[in-house]
Image (cartoon, rainbow, N blue to C red; front, side, top):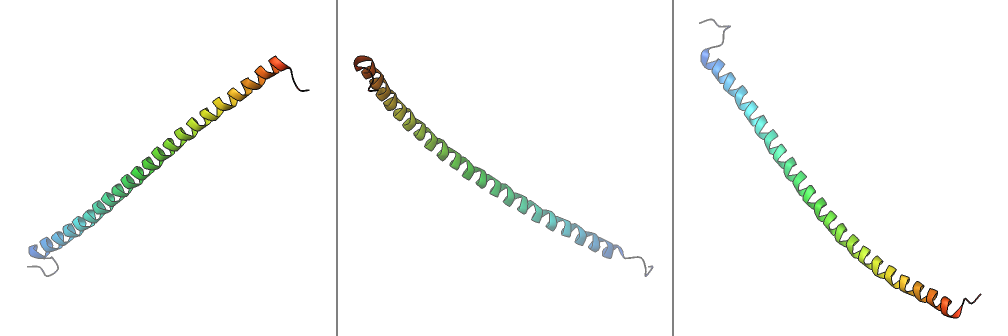
Length: 90
């Protein structure tokens, strides 16, 4: 056997070590990707919950606004009716 040429066992051992290193690296990358995906999903769900909460608050505010507008419109109508019936105080 030539001393400079690696033996078949040595070549297979080196190849197996290289393949093992690649697999370990890919597994780590896969775990990182899974963690990133999970974080993204959790952030998305939290954002969705905040948006739903905002929508509920906005709907409540709009409802309150509509009630206030109706009351003010009624008061304005009463004032206009009073002015028509009794004239203005100018």
